[in-house]
Structure formats: structure tokens, C-alpha cells
Length: 305
Image (cartoon, rainbow, N blue to C red; front, side, top):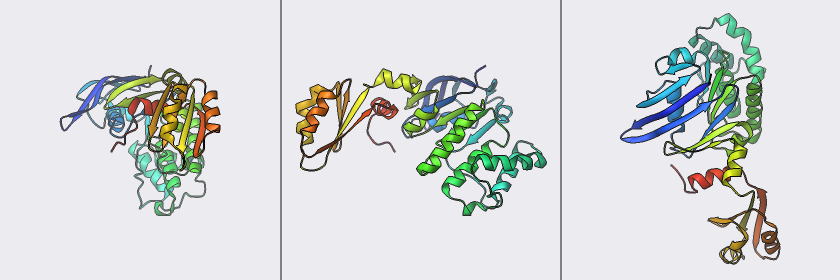
């Protein structure tokens, strides 16, 4: 049985279709990613899957239960890390966990017994009596993750779980999410960090304007959509990037420019690198292609509000 099965899902707001015939399946014990620009329909899709909004049409099955008809029963075995922390500032860290447990009908004694383990998992040992206002942004995010585990869920929804965090806090949360997956939990993740998706996701979809535009494992999508090597060339001042691109465009399969940077997508970069070594005023980075290259190719480089 799939952890989550979504078929032909549609939802309109104010006359605009924000989810447009979306279909995907999440297998148990995997990390599944929903990637897309701002306004692509990611958060709306999560809300529909949790039964917090009703779809206009389509079918959703969460943990074997139809949504929204049995959303309350299904959510009893689900944890949610929302996009923005909504911890209660009037309570301590442990009190936030205790009160949240009551929403699931859990006994206070049972939750209290689990609190030390949850705080340790979140890297918050010694913070049980800390007020929320005294916690850093990273601590609050980790406490929100611990709170999502109060009911020992089978499935955990994570809506941009590391946005706004420093690299150390991001890496700690990544480590904890990997531990959860190793323990057999199913993770459903939205993120703007392509390296996060590449590290964590077994499978993902890229959506834009509410539609699925591709699906697969990160490695498969990189191999399918992007040349294996990328050379980023920067104009440091004094160089002529435009002229270099025109002279050497044929040394790459594809070239894109964005501001003062040119991206050469290559199957073999040796000749291009030799030309760059002779060039004055240009700096370059030679790297393997990654999921961000896929994302940019499929959704464009323009800013989204």
C-alpha cells in the first residue's frame, strides 16, 4: 500500500487553477520531494493531501484512507513540520510538546516519558524548561521537528524545513531526517534548496503552475535533462564575457547567460577550459551538473514572487 496516492488532483482559487491534474505516488519508507518555484502549488498540494483544503476534483489516499473524507483519522498517524514555526511562545519547549500531544488524545504521562528522547533527537537536551523566545531560529526549527514526532507518525510532511537556517543547523536537520527514513518513516518534503533535495530524496517531482513537469530520482533527472559538466564563467572586470561566449559557444552543447555569468553545459569541457586558461579578466568554476541545473532548465531563471 502506498503511503500517499494522488490522482488527477485539481484546485482553483479566485478563478485560477493552482493545482492542475497532479498525480504521484509515495512509497512507504522513502523521502519524496515536491520541487517548484514560488507559486507553483507545492503548499496547496500539501494542504490538500492533509485534508486541510478540499480539492475540486481528483483522488487522494493517505495511509490507506480517503482524503478529505477520513482526514482526521489519517492525520492521527501523520506528523507535520509547517513552513513557518507556530510554537506557543507562552510555553516552554517541553510544554509545547506536552500540549501538542493532547491534540492526538495522548496521555500526559506518555508524552512526558517521551520528551527527553524527543529533545535529545532534536539536539535540544537541557532546553526542556527554555521559553520559546530564548531559542535561536535553528532551535525553534528543531523543536518544531520534535513536535511533529510526538505521535510517533508513519508519515511526516515537511514544508521547507530548513529555510532561514545557517549551514550548521541545516546539516543537523538533514542528519535527523536521514535517521527518520532509516527508521522506516515516510518523508514528504518541499524545499527551495536543490542540494537538500539531492541529498534526501529517493524520488521527486518538479511542478510549475500546478502541473507536474518531470518525475524521477535526483540522479536520473540529472542524467536525463542536463549535460554532465558545467563551466560557469564570470566577468571579473576587464574581460569581455559576451565576446568570449560568441567565440567559444561551439565548445559546449548549450550556453545560458544570466547577468555577468555564462553557463556552458558540456559533455567534454577540456577544450573550453584550455581557452579559459588563456583569457584575461574572466574567472570560472568547473563542476559536475546537479539538480539545480535541472530545476533552472525546466522552470526558467526569471524571478518568481
